[in-house]
Each structure stands twice: as structure tokens, then as C-alpha cells.
Image: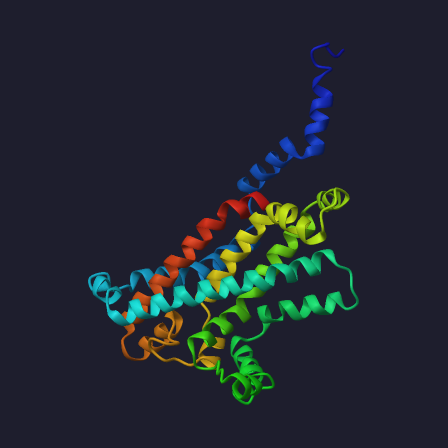
Length: 290
């Protein structure tokens, strides 16, 4: 017979099972006790494949000359330009990317799937192809650039502004995807409630929606900034590699690798440190999402 004290435990145990609590813990312990060898070996090879180059970079870093390498005027010039252009590209992405994400998430219109595919295309497009496309559009003979040059005397390629445009082109999709996902997860009833109280759609977006999706915007902005900081292909194709004007850190690494490998390693270490800092900043958001 079941004692009275045992009876309340059954519903609790059933609820825990439905929630996946104790059972999930047992499954995880089981995996830890016996990992199949056909899965363990490729997993370790994959880990080594990803981590070994980073370890090699740290091992080969000229630590004795690192302070001199990092304090050279060329390095600070490239680093300053990289930070400035990446921040400006992120600002551009925020101004036009957040409204675009809202359009994709909240408005039904014909061809929305095609528009979303075009927005995310720079994620898979080779960066050099993106640079060529920017030249065809905004170059002095481009379909838009020729009119900018003729009417306003504005030339975008091979300028600092060109660097910002190239970085924004490849980085903005990261922001749009992040913000659109956050918008789809947010409850639209708050916006509807604001509308019933007399708020316009823009006021509801500004006063209700933006505070709700602020974490998604912040996470997307950080990802976009990191992607802009590491951009190489589109930048060198559309803006060139001119020290002090368009030479960002990735371009400086490429140039130094041909003449001074130790300087290239030192510059790469700076970019690695920035990437680790970005991952550390987003860790809590990713862990919460998982």
C-alpha cells in the first residue's frame, strides 16, 4: 500500500517529468558517462581544428617586442580608423536597419520573403563580390555614383566614407536578423493596447516597442560592430588600402604579413582580443537564449 506521505509526490514527479527536470538531468549524466567513440573522435577533431590556429597565434606572438609593435604610429592609426569606421557603420545600420527589421516583422506585403532573402544576402555573398557590387552602384561610373559625382561632386570609393559604406553593407544584416527575431518574439498586444489609447503607430513603436526590443537591438549592434571591425574584402575592393585614410586593422594585417610577420601577428592579436571581448559581452544573452 502507498502511504499518505507518498501520494503527493506522484503529481510532483509527473510535473517534473513533463517539464523535463529530473529526466533531463539523468540524460545529461548518462551522456557524460558514455560518449560513443564514433561521435567523440570527430568532436575532438572539430574542437582542435577550431582552437589550434588560435593557440598557434598565441604561441607565435612576439611577446618581447609586442609593446613596441602595438605602440607604433601605424598601428594606432589603423586601430583608430577601424574603431571610428566600425562605430559609424554600426550607427548607419541602426538608423536604417531597425526600421527595416520592423517592416519585415510587423508588416505583411507581397514579396516579403524575397525582400528578407535580399537583406540577408550579404551574409553569404563573398565580401569581394560585395565590394565590386558597391563599385558598380556607387563608383564614379556607377548607376548612382555617377549622378552623385555630377550633381554634388561626391566621390565615395577610396575614401573613409567608402570604408563606412562597405562595412555597413556587410554588417547590417546581422543587426536586422537579430532585431527581427526579437520583434517576432515580442507580444504585439502591447502595441495594440497603445493604439487603442490613441497613440499613433510611430508613437507606439517609439514608446512601447523600442523598450521591449532594446536587448535585441543591443545584441545586434554589437554583432554588427564586430563584423564591421573585421571586414576586409569589400573594404579593400571599394575603398582601397591607403594608410591613414582607408587602411583599417584587417588591411594593415594583410599588408604587414608580406613584409613584417611579427607586426601582422601583433595586429592579429589585437583583433582576437576584441573578438573575445565581444563574445564575452554577448555570453549572457546567448546562455539565456539556450
